Length: 178
Image (cartoon, rainbow, N blue to C red; front, side, top):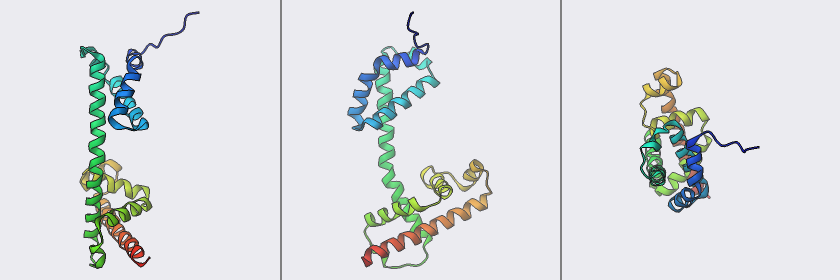
């Protein structure tokens, strides 16, 4: 009996070039899990628009270029993460109306405190803050996306910023006392 052949030409093409692509992407990102994620993203893109492969003269060069583009996008996202954390810290401190000596603490200690405080946020609050400060959506857009009232979103953002500021201040005070 003849072995059944995969009827999906995109998967066939990716499987044909998989080892070379994986080696290339692994060289770019230095992490096997991230390299595998990028190859999965590439496959999704190609499954959504398989006609992209018919336009490519050299299919492997096209796949390699697309994978490089995806890897670069991930790199930019990671480098922006530090900027996002810095902005979150500033917003949290802005919401804190009580000036104190914690403002003198080093930025790295503030960021570490922020990371720990963010982990303690309820999932919905973290989601709203992420939409606002990481994605850059305004309160109206957030309200539309999650089906809430704009005023409720504004109040939730204010309370979350205030809560983060208090949490950061408390953590920094605990570290200073230790």
